[in-house]
Image (cartoon, rainbow, N blue to C red):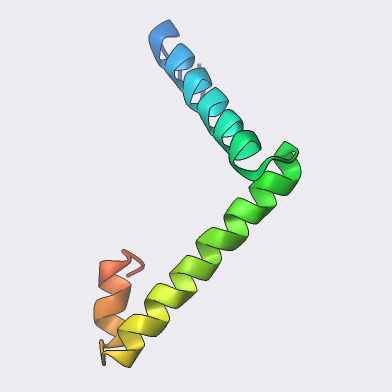
Length: 73
């Protein structure tokens, strides 16, 4: 079958459920359409990550240990 991977029906249904839950959460939480809600959620995530890194830098944490903690290394 080449590079294709087949999933079980259960796995496909579970994946669709996760997608529906994510869509519903974004639309309900941001009270706007999905595109705007998704954009705002991404913006919040990036902002919180930046704030986290800033706090760690203020405490004197080395960049190498921060990379390891964030699983970037």
